Image 1 (cartoon, rainbow over the protein chains, first blue to last red):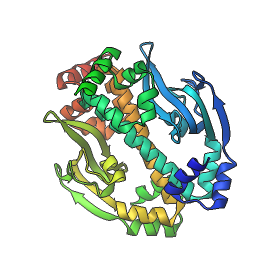
Image 2: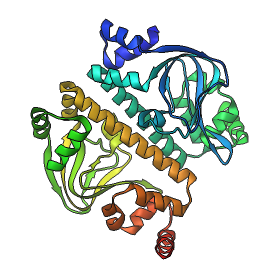
Image 3: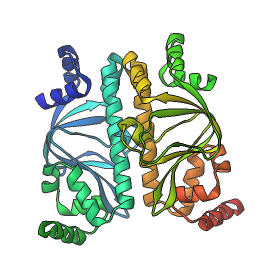
Image 4: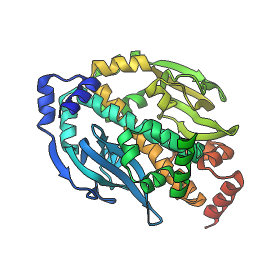
Length: 191
Length: 191
């Protein structure tokens, strides 16, 4: 949990007491690959900090899984729109590789908000990061060609994600076919 | 400014002193129609609360103006990604109809963040609303047909915006041609 402390301390600066208060509100969980943590249609009750692992969010479009986000070690994940609005999720949160995560419930996060402006700041920063991420992704999808999309992906995402997320999942994330992805990777590798 | 006080008080609850502190940080501005407030490529220095008027954000795609957001009386607007990241804006903020706005600078908002957790909460709520708005728009654009997009638009946007934003601007906002928009409106009106 040292990583989480360091990340939070860098973002919002925490005293030992504030960290202890935060830490006691977390639940440590282990999930096997392919476990569904949040189902489409249910309300996201928790935000997850990943100690170690690999997870994704996706939604169904015409019966096909369209991946929307990947996260690995030391990152946060949830079906964020459902979490902040406490409305049914349009996405599913699923484990790709065995993962150890720390969950923080919506209720406990709201208690933290009331306790200190530092946690309000954390909530603001998370919302701003998610906003910039979804906007960047939307613009990339609208304005870039397949190769540019892949180059953006490998620039913005962690090496572990680029290397270990199955290729067919990356393809739907980029809105391209697995064959196009394979061709683009060969082009980049050769050039 | 009574409207702004009421909106803020509902969102974050303000004492008279906190409201005074907030109010002294605002600048009242009047802008004529077609005034560009934030240029694409510049950094958004301010967030705007609209007392009265009509504004839009747009970006250029293949030389064409693609509208991304409209706001009117009692709403907030900026080129939000540029404002929160203090990076060059990919959008332009322009006045559609003569408008009276109250601007709050990035620097002054950050002073407010340090002064009270209530303003951090305001920042979080604004970021969350913007996140949900852009996500909703992205999903609508990806999954809905032209008629469904227009029905979403008239459901989500203020009557003033639906009635007074020029039709060609609404068409690019929805990613459809002005002719399709005209046909859809006739269909809805007749049925």
